[in-house]
Image: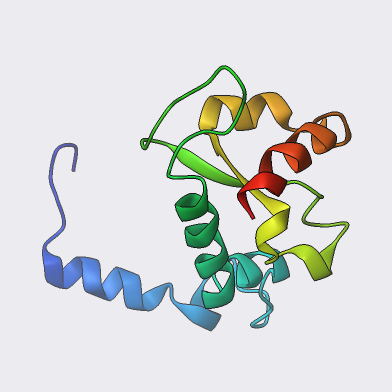
Length: 121
């Protein structure tokens, strides 16, 4: 079968055979809360508002990447401050590289990011 592809009809049958309760990964309909929150419309609108406010530019001092791979970073941790998850003042736009630098060091970067965001509000 190497190099051979299933027909579209066969692929549909395989797909149907593994959906929902038939899937070996089925967990009784339980969904990951984090995944549900991050796919919510309110959360998506928050991300778009953060990007728009920051002019689709990385806000890390010394990095002026515009567009491309941008991420909306929570200034105060997503897990620790549920009430601030969609607060515009709790978001900042970072490029992927700068966001990676700040992971697990949120407390160190929080004062700087707060100063950067405050004048924009």
